[in-house]
Amino acid sequence: MAGVLDHVSIQCTDLVASAAFYDVVLEPLGGQRIMDFGNAIGYGVPPRPDFWIGAQATGDGFRESHIAFTAPSRAAVRAFFDVAVAEGATVLHAPRLWPEYHETYFGAFVRDPDGNNIEAVCHLPGLPVSKTPRASGRCLCGAVSFQVFGDLRNVINCHCHRCRRFTGHHMAATAASAADLVIEDADSDLRWFYPVPEAGYAFCQRCGSSLFWRSRLTPDRISVCAGTLDPPTGLETVAAWWTDEASDYHVRPALPESGTE
Figure (cartoon, rainbow, N blue to C red):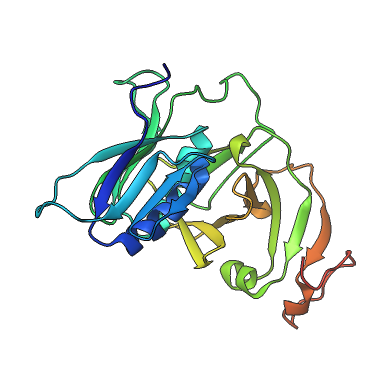
C-alpha cells in the first residue's frame, strides 16, 4: 500500500482564478490539468488526477488548508516557488531545508488565491558537497549566486525585442539543465517577470542584474546570462537568434544568424 490517500479536493471561491494559479504552479512539479468538468477540475501526473478543485458549494467561512505537493528535485521546488511568486502568490516561506522534519526535507510555501497554505517539497538529498561545479556565477551585489553541476551549452546571442529590453543590449546566454542549477538566494531576492505567459526573465531585486530566462514549454532547461558566470567559462559564442529584431546601432559579429530561432 503506497499511501492512505487516493485523491483530495478543495472548494474555491473563484474557480477560474484558482485554476489559472494551479495550471502554472503545478507544471514545474510535473502536474497538469487532466480532467475538466467545468465546475470541477482534476490535476495530477498523467494519467490519473489526484488533486481536485471545485467551485464553493458548502460552508460560509474560510478554513485554511495545507496541501503539500511532491517535487522531483530541489530545482523543481525553486521553480514552483518562482512561478507562484510571479503569479502574485503571498510568500510564506522561501525554498530552504527544514531539518526539524528531517535532514533532506526541502520545501517552499505560498498561499493560493483562496489563502490556503500550498507547499512543494522534495525529500531527496541535494547534490553531494564533494561534487565540483562546472561553473559558478552571481549577480552584481552578490545577493543571488549559483552553481552549475552539469553541461553548459555554448553561448547564443538573442536579439528579440524582449531580450533587448530586459538586458539593455542583446541577451548572451548559455543554458543548463534545471536539475543541475543550484541557486543560493538567502533573502529571496530573485524575482521572475513574465512578459508573456510562456517565457520568463529572472533578475535580482536588489541590484537589478539580469540572471536567467526560461520557457514554460521546456521547464527542464534554464538559460543563464553568460556575463554573470565567473571566468574562465570555457564557452564560446556560436550563433545569433532573432536578428530580424536586432537594433540598428549594434554591429553584429560574423556568426551564423537566424531571423527567429
